[in-house]
Length: 481
Image (tube, rainbow, N blue to C red; front, top):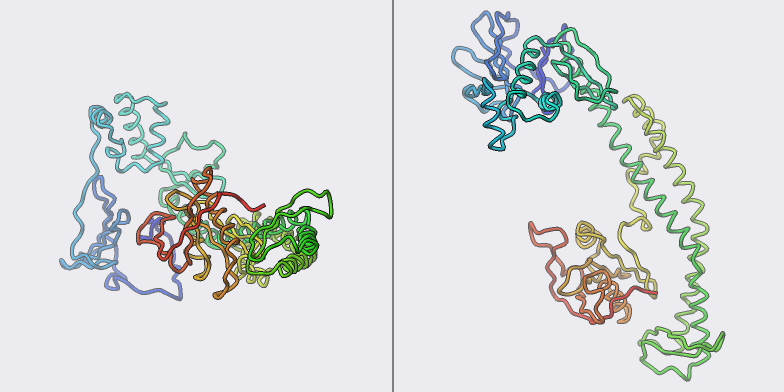
């Protein structure tokens, strides 16, 4: 006899022979080994089975419920398979449904009929409502239930197989199921339990091998496709290098028009149409140094563009390979296919499992500011927590519109000693204000603090934090050009 107490695969069935595992096996109730069974009885309206032995001992099986267990009773001494109990739990027989008035009472008090039909599993409750065609007439429902009980007293066990080949065992035919499901009639209840139990175990073994594999492949494939898409989009945009170089030329040509310590200057575009143009400056630098800074940006932008063109071929190949692996894995239907696939692609799968998240595949909104600074913005409360508590570094700057709901925003610094220019912080603050309820304000206060001074209270809602050592900047909500 096979008895399983492990949810959700709880079952009892008999089978000839014994397939004893060689590992992780212990003997229990050894005093019953070799004893002959004299009788088997089932408690009235309760899922409790007792096996009586010729030596006077009993083995009581309570397979269902929160305290599923097997008890060996010998000379008034009771031992539980799972331990802890010194006596058998009290029997609680399911209520008997004797008349339609009980149904009427339950319906009038908004009770579920499941409270009257505790021995009916969910598929039988669904079948009852299907046969009633939606009627809530107590007499109609009572007649249907009694007919089903008579069928259960003389069961016709059958297994229904859904599209995923997961078995559903029923003691009577079910009309409410999808007619495309395969139906297999069993010769006995015991055979039905045995076949469905073994099939469930096989399905669980397959799921344990298949689902982690398919999740990893899908995640990495999505990351690769997202990275490829971003690089392609970036290459389609006009290069920033020409604009930065143009600003550098204008600054060098009109040094006499630029004062020291300015964070912005408006110059005539003498190299094109003469229109006025606004150029952001670093007030810590001289006019010549600001021009050199723009030349350096132009150089870095061109170098990055060359690297992107070189990188895009590798990204396309990676995305194609992952798509091929994912499509192949989707066709698997057996454990042996999954195992063979893992063996064949062992090296590649190992690399995928241990791979770090591609910077281009991060889930947050990303903005690139002047001098290469990046701003990351959470898209929802869950991402806010992830960004602030996991992905932001202690020395990064954390920003949030003050007094209103909004996204967590992080200005990523280059290192612990990095001090970003004031105008960069203000750009990041403007982004934080834009992604908040203060978006329509002409000016909005924004909290700025080092991330190490931001913490989450215990048991607080997602996105909730406490900020210490904050300062506030006033900015116009906007996004970078």
